[in-house]
Image 1: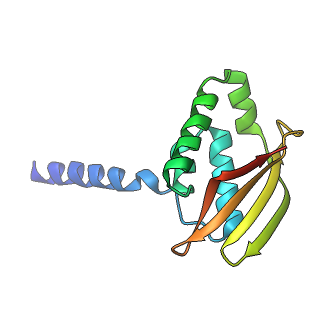
Image 2: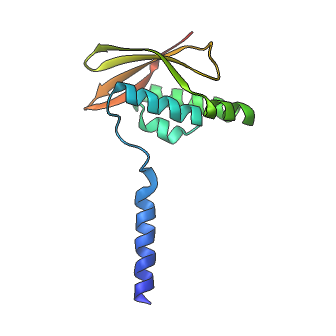
Image 3: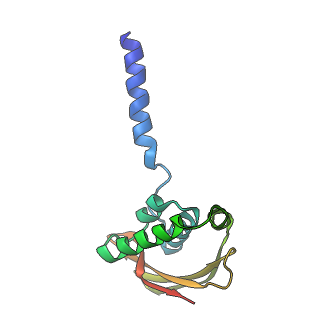
Length: 133
């Protein structure tokens, strides 16, 4: 009986620890931008939040983006999930700031530029400076 309880307890512990194994610190600005954009296109806002500079403005902007996503049709959600990220220009501004200009293959006419900044040795997306064209 104790053997079975031990196996169950270990299974529960391993399952609890494995919850965020998909999230890892971005290696560089490009990786942070790509991970954030992919998570957003997939509707995975918990993962997108992981790569976000967490301040009040950015969290508010991410919640608005999530609400917009939730109101989309299933077909549009599927199209975004199937879309490719098409980087146009990734420009280091200095050693702690990079801009990432891109569009996705679903909305090829919508070009977006995000800013990625390095804070406490971690690359994070700053939505406050998003530029849409």
